[in-house]
Image (cartoon, rainbow, N blue to C red; front, side):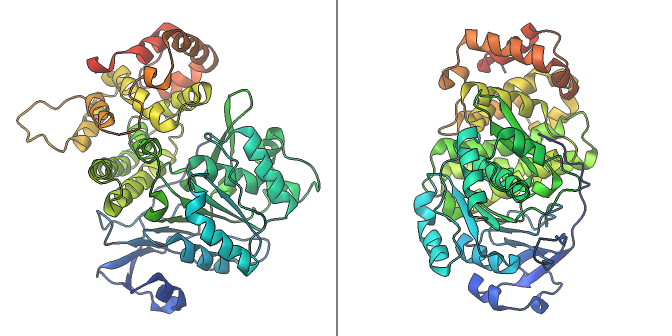
Length: 467
């Protein structure tokens, strides 16, 4: 992973008249956007002009269907990105973006679970002559090396000029790495992709332009809103690459893509939004601005998760999770990545093949409780943000209690090590590995240092009931 030291800047809010359909929007010239305060689509002109190998693209915007948003606050389009669209149809919006990007040879990557929902759109791309190759569904959880390298080689062979990624965090991250390899492969024609080759490509200076990436997430991992990409090597070691140029070009969040997802994906990735927020709030390098934005995100994700527990397909609840997760990940990536929990859970996930949502379910409250005395003031703000039922007459429970109680309500998310088939001996070996290999970094990130592998093991094995 890497850090993205970007200031959080206030955004200029423009509001577009609510139109009957996206197809109408696509036909209107930019001059129809104007300053206003009425309901409709929130738009944001905090854009970044980016150069591609073929053209200078026009200014872009943020669109959020305000009818679905819990708050009217605009969010800044992340630096290096052209646009973010939330609560709109992915297919028509993606076609519009392809036209804006002036691309015509699109390499499509998707989760296997997303494939049935996008096959009609892939067929449309093929009929239009835009499909570079058959849809790739080989990227597995965590971005395993074999599937990633296959995708890199396929995209390079057909000389794709755009990458469209549909699915969760592993696919979104893989798309960034495919783009990185595409730019490198153009200079070393015929060479096959390797992890070392991809990682070497991130260090080029100057960095050549990367092909654009259109991300259509089906969940809430938020990988599409960062310039960091993870992968898991054949040795089950978490690795990856990072560069500002790896920031995806456009994000389109369509709640229809999440329909039918397994509980462990939908609720697990949304829980990551909670993890991102508390990681930013408790980070030693966090500023008051970062903590404020993370707390705002935490409130929204908490509201969204509770709404999804009641109705998994609630559009409003999913948008709350997405907008809150967006606030949280941008706060975390403003000089606070990785957090202590990120570092631990990334390695736990890679070592034991556990989805990161379940890693948060198992470890998040334990990590909070470990450093509670050293981060008490910040944990009080976390507890207040998560407290939706206390009338003020009762003492405020600890932040770790709120987190563990929330996790207990989430279907499909592991609550303890046994749920992930991780036993005590495996945990002891993991504690020794983490302390011996990453102890210095752990202690830079943790408000309370680990003095030994036994300290780390004690944190890992603390009974949830005692939090």
